[in-house]
Structures are given as C-alpha cells and as structure tokens.
Image 1 (cartoon, rainbow, N blue to C red):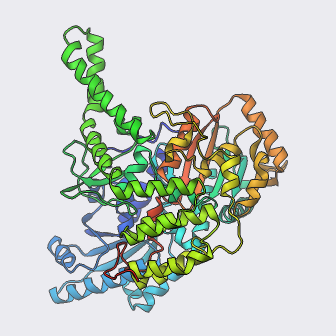
Image 2: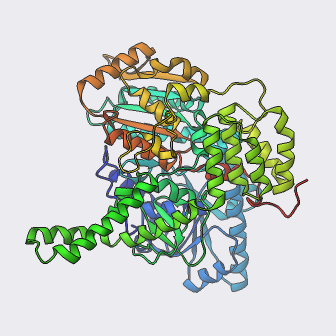
Image 3: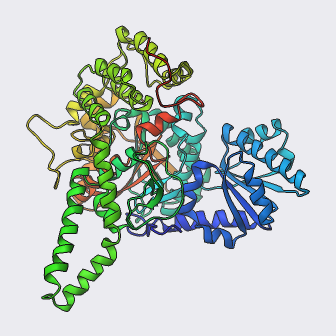
Length: 637
C-alpha cells in the first residue's frame, strides 16, 4: 500500500474489511491469468489502484510492467524486453475506454508480429462486463483476441469515513448522456453494505436519481425474501441519498477549506496530491493527480499521500484555509521553543511526549508549510480574487453578468467562466434573454467554435439554460436554511461556530439539507422548500414482517419528524450515511465532519459518493472532446 494509507478502523464503521475484500478480488483475478503480466491501466484508475494494492504486492502476483492505456509504441518494446506474454487491461466499460483498448491491442499485435512474438490479452471490466463493451470490441475486430472478464470492484475506502465508487463519469452519464446504468451500481453497492451491516432502518432522499436508487435497492431486498438481513444493532441507522443536481450551486463555488483548496488548485485523487516539489518529506513517488485542478507553478512534480494517516493533515484538512495556516505556524513555533528552551529543564515524560510529537508531526510539517505557501500565492493571483468577488456577488443574488463577461474578454480559462455561469443559473434560474445570445457568441469566439458541443451538453444536462420564467429555489433556501452569514457576522478563523467557513461565508445547501433531515423537526420544517428544489423527495422505514419478509413503508413528514425527535432525545449517537450521487466536494465532507464533531447533530457520518469532485472536474467531462480550456487564438467579435 502507499506510504500514508489510512487505517480504516477509526471511523463510524470499520472499512478495512471492504478494502481487504477489494484487494482479494483484484489479486484473485490476476492469479487466474497465469504467467508474467503487464498491467495496462485506464488513466482514471491509476490512483485508486494504490488504495487496493501496492506495486510490490502486484509484482508478487506476476505483474512485471505497469503502464497507462495510451497508444505509445515504446510500451511494446518494454513488454518485449521483460518477456511478458500476458497483457491485462484494467478499465471501466465506457465507449471511449473500449475503443482505446482496441487501439492498444492492435498496436501490441503489430509490434509482436514484427518481433516474432505473441501476446495473450485479457480485459478486466469494472464493476462487470457489459454487452456494450463486447459489441465495441466486436466492431473493432478484436473480440476473439481478448478474454473479457468481470472485476466486481464497488466501494473503495478513501479514508476512515469516506467511501467512493470511483465513477467520475457518473455525473455526465446521468445528466448529459441520460445513461442511468450507474444508478444500478450505486444501488448494488449500497445493498452490499446492508448485507454486511444489516438493513438500514431509515432512508431519506431528494432527487430523481436518489429515488431511482432507492427503488432498485428495494427490489433487491424483495428478491431476497426471507434471506434479506435484519436491521443491525451496530450498522447504519439512517441513509440519506442526495442527487448532485439538487444542489449545483455548491460545487460551482470555490472551496476554502485546506483540503478543498488543495483540490481546487492542484487536484486531489484518492488521497494523492501531485504538486511542485516543496522540498519537504512525504513524497510517495511518481503517480497521477486527479482531474479538475489547475497546476500552479512549474518545476518538478511529486506525488504526496494526504489522508488521516498524516497527523498534520488530519488536524488541518477540515479547517478554513487561514486557520490551517495559523495552526501550522503555531505548531512549528511551539516545537522550536521547546527545542530551544524546554529540553534542558523537561522531565523524562515531557521529553518522551516531545519525541512522540516529532515522530508523528514534524516529518510532515515542512511538506504542509510548503503547500500552504503555494496556496497563498494562488489565492492572491488577480484572477482568483476576481472570481471570488463574482461568486460572493452571485450568492448575494446580484446580477454579476457584466463581471463574468469582463473575465471572458480578459482571457480567463473556460472552466472557471463556466463555473460562474452555472452558479448564476443556480441562483437566478437561468441566463436572462437579454444576455443569452451575446454570451453564447462571446464564448464561442473566445474559446473556439468546437465548444458549441460543450454548450449543447450543458443545455441537455439542464445546467446552462435561457431563463424562461422559471424561478430558482436558491433565494428561498438562502433564507430558510441560513446559507449566508448575516449582516455583521464574521467567520472566526481559529474556532468557527458554523459551516459557513467552508466556502468563505456560504454554508453548502446539500449539507444544510442533511442537517435539517437530522434535526428534531426533520424535513417537515422545510417541506415547501423541498418541493421547490428539483427532483422527488421520500422518507421510508425498512423492516421485516412476522414471517421475516422484508417490508417498507413511506413515512409522512410528521412521523419522520417524530422519530427524528425521539432519536435526538435518546442521546444515542446515530450512524448516518450520506450518499452523494454525482459527486461530493472535499468542503462538503468537511462541513459534515464539523457538524458531527461540534455536536450540532448527534451522529457520526459515513460519506459515500460516486467520486470526489470539484466544479471543474464535473464540467471537464462535459467539454467537447479534444477541446481546450484556454482561450482560442481568435479575437473576440
């Protein structure tokens, strides 16, 4: 495993068995393919693989060569040099991926013929093989040359309290492609958790995707009959399903927690950060960072493991960026003062404590001090400051379209501009008619006319639309859920009192919905608001009848509120899983942790998601293929 790997036994539920099962599944699949192997990875799975098994373990199971799924002729030379015969592809079964596999197979076959060699090809499809994938391979003329097998990997634990399906394309599939197949995989993964920990007594949800997942889960329980598990005393008490499209404002805003800002600036992928060398300790060697961030600065790039196994990151990850920077400086100052003044007068117990702190924290402090300095430079850049001002105005319901147009004319990147436009739509209900055509023309002239496909995808997804009399629910949500700081209030950087610090004055709507669901009055207190937000709403109770058959009943808001109040009055800390269908940001996870740690809600959270995301990573999947994020070499008309 990578150097800094979370223990997975300190969260609300033990996640280590899930990681161990994923590792066994992968290694068994590799062992079924005899001989020396080359493992060819879909780029998006390079980082997740490190959470399942490290390179040394894979080599013990016959893997001699690692490479990404790219048509690089030099790969064939490396395979021939190592004497590899088995070429194993590890990928999801998407259209583009299967076409890339076909191209790679033909490249290897061509190189092998010239060298008088031959390869055997296997394709491990996650989480299962599909008819679509086999059809593509057949059309490419290589189905008979490739052994296609299932690799049933579902959950990958990212940390003690975060589970991910690592399906970053799910958002695009659900919104723009209208492909709902990922909902089955979400339901199957949640059903597996019920098999492991017992039936979840209470399920709440908001959004059409959430409702579809619940229906599939219900059907799976019914099909089990008497074999369906009973509610577990030590399992999940409540499952809250949230469709990402219910709250599109939050991911379009800039995260300002320490971890969230790292994701925005550099891009995080499965607890790994690829950033310029800080000169500190803690590099995990070469690797890949996640999509969605923009690299800042040049120089040598290194990959750093960042998760709860890192004592410094554990203390700072969920803090407001400024607070994290102060904590780092104060910790360094305290250690230095003890070294300079206290060591000579300290007793043996104090010295032991100091040495323990040095062992756990000091080795990582230089790394995080360097990262903080790079973040400081990034947030002081004129473009970042300008975007923050526009975001603040939009969240306050101001018409910031002239400011957004100025950013376009100044050559701001396409993804930051689109994030602001989608935030505008989320707040105001769409682009006013007086702006729509001129805005569309400016975008195409500035960034290239290939982005007519990008705009079409955004429109099909319902994210960037002309305002046609529709009203946004954001103004009502802002008032009823107290999404913004009130006049005269300020964020206490060292000890914030509420979750507004995660987005510099804005409390994520998604997290406020979770908080409201777990309050004594439940969602009954905001029923009119929920009706304005997109998608279906439901609250269910699961159980079994006298014969042991699974049952399910809908709960009215009043009954659900009464049960929520009873749970709150009991004083027992509940275990609540919040499943984000379409992606969740680091700052939203931090906000949930804050609510739990401060006792604002009496529960421990387990966060599930199809993938971690930022606004940029969500939108990157909707860009026209091969299109650039930077302004084209065309003058604005």
